[in-house]
Amino acid sequence: MASSKEYLQFVLEQLSELQEITYRAMMGEYILYYREKIIGGIYDDRLLVKPTRSAISYMPTVTYAIPYENAKEMLFVEEVDNKDFLIGLFDAMYDELPAPKPRKKK
Image (tube, rainbow, N blue to C red; front, side):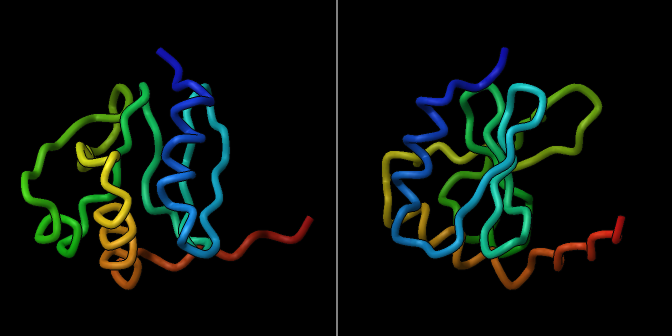
């Protein structure tokens, strides 16, 4: 099942106080970027983030989910209605996320 554009817009609105939140559509789902680093994505209308140590300690309950077949487990964010929680989660995770890989010149 692909994710809806409406759910994407809802999550983006919840994160609107953060600078540099972008996304890329990929096979009916959406990859989310925070200041150019991949932080997670929207899969089947669920917000999933990378399982960093800071995210695990920040979340009150940790639930793992697989975004698609044969993928690594990610953390399922249940509290998408709580804007302050989401902003705090993304800020807490940022330093642990890997730097973006340099793009190859064409």
